Structure formats: C-alpha cells, structure tokens
Length: 328
Image 1 (cartoon, rainbow, N blue to C red):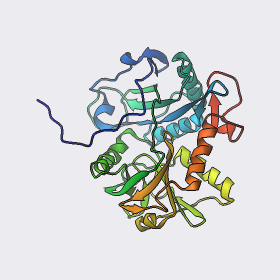
Image 2 (image 1 turned 60 degrees about the vertical axis):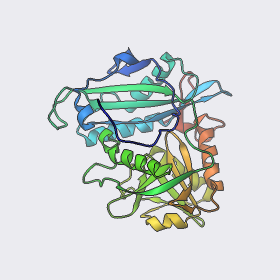
Image 3 (image 1 turned 90 degrees about the vertical axis):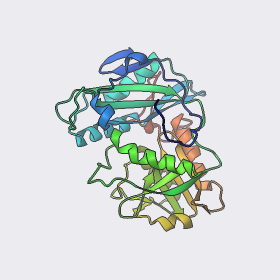
Image 4 (image 1 turned 90 degrees about the horizontal axis):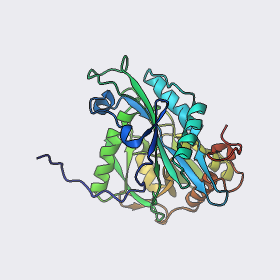
C-alpha cells in the first residue's frame, strides 16, 4: 500500500477539465492520446521548458483574446536556448497555432494554455543532448476565481530561490519549480496563502509563481532582474502601466525582507491571476490591511486590456476568431 505524508487540503481549482484537442508536434490529437510515457526523460528530471498563456473572452466584442502570446513564445525560445535546444516553430507560428487550437476546441470563455517543450525520449541518463523532444500546447477553461479579492496572507519562506549559477533564473524550466512547490505547501500548512522567497543573498526574489512589487510612499519598487527572478511578461506590463499612471518607472533594486513589513502596498503579478494584493506578511498588516487603491486599479486595467475593453495597449492582445490587429 502506498501512502503520502499529510498535507494541507488543496483549494478548489480555478480550472475545469482540459479541452479535448491538444497540439503535439504539428498534429492535432485527443487529450488522452497526448500523454507522455513514464519513461520519458522529463518525467524523471524535469528537462524542459514551459509557458502559461491567458485567453480572455470579451462578451461585448464576442471575441477571444490571447494575452501577450508572442511575448510568451519568445521567452519559450530563450528558455530553450538556455537548455541548448531549438524550438521548431517561430513565436509567430506558435501564436497562430495557439489561436487555431482554441478555435478547434470552440473556446468562447476564459481559458489558460500550457505550451510545453520537453525531452520525451526514454533515455535514463541525465543530459540535455541527444534525446528526442516534444512540443505540445494544451488548454483548460478558467471556471473560478484565481485570487481572493480581499487580498492574501503571505509568509517569507525559509526556502531560497535557486541562484542563476545553479538553475538559470531567466529560463522558465520545468524542473525549476520544485523549490517553490515545497515553499507553497509549507506556507499553506502554516495557514498562509502564499510564500515569498528570498535569494541566497537574502534579498527578496519573488513569490512561488509571481513577481513582487511594493510601494513605499510615492515610489514603486520591484526586485532587479539580477536578483534571481524570472523576467515576467506581466511584470513588464505592470512596469509600463505604473509608469503611465505615475510618470515614473518603478525602481529595480534589491529589496530587503524587512521592507516588506513597512511598505504601503504589496502585490504579486503573473499571467494566471494578473494582480494579487498582499494584505499581510508574517502577521504584519500591509498598509491598512486591505488591497491598495493603486493595486486595485492595476488589476482593473489589466482585466480591461485582456478583454480589449477600449484601445489601450491593444498591441498586448491578439484575437482568435477575427482579423483585428493585435500583438506585435
């Protein structure tokens, strides 16, 4: 009999069952036929790279929009290059393929997509070279809320973000998420919603799957790209939106852990949830203990941009069913 250690009860998933059609190496296959072997190299070692892409349905326009899909696929190419791999399709071709996947699945609701480029050859040795790869894209419906609108409670984890000299920080790697996964479960076991991870030098890096921004007075600050963070797509968008609203681009620098306890607003950002207000860190209230006004505005802005409610930053989205101009 196999047993597992006790763990916190997982919250209800925001995702429904996967859509039936999956793109695999140039072909459209049923989701049940898209599975990999237990002998695949990536199953043992996490050898591969992935992305997460949001698609948002606009009832007003009766259109589905991909958010920054080409930017995500450019990062997939960069991650593959770090691994010594080459993605067989261009970012633009992958964006077009993703739109076709959504059309084939007749998606007319919010969705989340997972592109994967992994080593699927049944080779046991640990290496990146000489092992067959597989490129796939799958999609899930988003059926629930990804964040609590009242904000979340976070803890500073004892787990450190892996340094770039060990696991390349700028690459979104499958095997690189074991540390964040442990940190998230430990945080949940302690009664928190999320874990904030430091780098090995003691500076704030990121949350388990999100970048970090804080406001102290009139200044917005985020960890620099040299702090062992993933250079997030949503992070770049938040930088742009904050610069437009304040007239000043957020400062990129090292953030010491104690600064989190003294800031006026604290937020996390990422593709799935967009903006997550943090209202408490290790029992200390952030600001007045409620989502900050600027944080709430950022979330509203990104939600509107994602469904193209207006023309603001239309270049960040691309339509699935029509020929509207979109992402550059």
